[in-house]
Length: 251
Image (cartoon, rainbow, N blue to C red; front, side, top):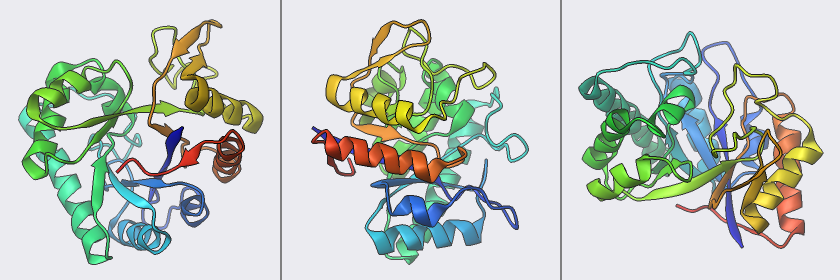
């Protein structure tokens, strides 16, 4: 059992700080670095990439809609060409900074509303995949099992990796419960750790209606902007290791 543990990092902006990036980088194996469109700025991106390189943590570009005001969690009807260009812009920027710090971007993870939209929208999924293919078609894209991204990416020769979320509630269909709904984010450390272990060992998670949903995942996410994110991530890491899971980046 080999699992990657990832977290969204570098999500501060200017004088505003969000989460404890340095503490999380001591826990996770992959860092989804905000690219400046939903959060992050040049200094934050540089510091996050440098700290990840120092710790041997794999760097991913967390691309988003251009939506600082709503933290990238507002769905947008972006034109495919515009969305493709903006994803390419973000990816190239963070990879350039990462390389200057001695690392590189090794995968792509869409953020927030864009992540959820391209799980079901072939047009926007195509725009994101086109951007990745234009930049480096060998870069894997993180997405949910069953997402339309898998087929779109396969047609373009771009690899995909299944991801699960330890701290998010699931619908019976295997989608993430909208953050507008109560209970969409799980804050109890014991529950989050238990869900992560079930995902890794049994390949399943309990949905909001009590049913068991299959989640075949190579990477598990714990959100860096969640209150007590460090405690949650450490609990997940400890539980996975205790269950005999090997923690290793997928990229």
